[in-house]
Length: 225
Length: 228
Image 1 (cartoon, chains in turn orange, blue):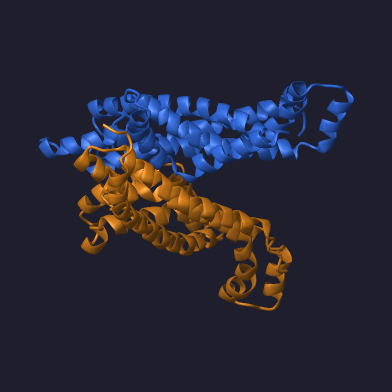
Image 2 (cartoon, rainbow over the protein chains, first blue to last red):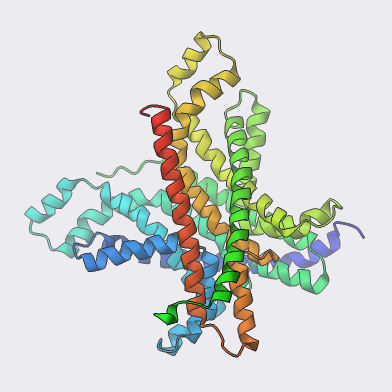
């Protein structure tokens, strides 16, 4: 038996690329959830009301310290059995469960990036807003966030790449991403070398340029004061 | 309150899984730290080919994603080289360790670069060899810079150990999956939400233990290596 069969490799590549597109789609949807939810988490954590800020801090710590894989299992296997939750929220499709899992997991990371950005805004900006009698929502929207968000962008870029690397975990809850396709080929054709090697190469083709792009973003400084 | 806990046999199974998880994290940490130090130093070598070899390793091991590397190690690598198949524990430790080493190398490199340049110049003036310089001057000052991000990295690797359940290693995550599958034939099925919450809490406890160990190490290194 030859160890590497080129004909077989070419035959399975389109399917693996198709799977890769699903993995990329899950990442794009997941990061959208993460950057939006993460911002609200960051603002909520700064709340003066302790009954908001304390539980949020604890939940963020809990989600950040536990494996995404188990969180996905929870969303996919346990959630449908919790009967007091309304049905449309309980029964998630595999892709939805993955997007929610990735989104919430990384929202907790993103909230830390936002928090650092918000903390780096000068205290005088808050004081100026108070003295101008701006409403709280106006202060956040027009004064604080336009300064904080650009500073949070480089770490958010890193989480984007990180999420892409975690997205194949969806194969454990039957999302037809690149790893799922490779595992399906393994059980159908009893071949492992080509599927997993091509999956790895496809991964590197996407993730290394993405990482280089994010690093170039990091080198640019965002001073807009 | 009784609803939140499992029975003794299930906790026994989870404990066995936890011990496997601990073995995987210890093994990955050892390999990862070795690779991190070697590759982190290699990234700053005088010789260009060493620098580039280290860079290739780092970009490869970081870019490929731990889970893909794991499946490739477990199923493709042995066949590709005509070797006998690898025990899942070894494949898991290799994949997670190599992945950790790549991230760790960047931490080590950054910390070495953060040591003031005058220190290196002083060792040259004192006619120290490169090895003496690293061992007695640069590393002691780099360790306090390395430790905080390294603790976070170790917790990331702990979370990554759950992936070995997918290559049939009986770690904590897989024990949970086996209990779930047994539910189908069981008279008294375990509520899955309770099962997974228990598992998540065990991971949380392990993560807190790692965080505390690193805090102790940080305090010690601060005492031993001065104020930096």
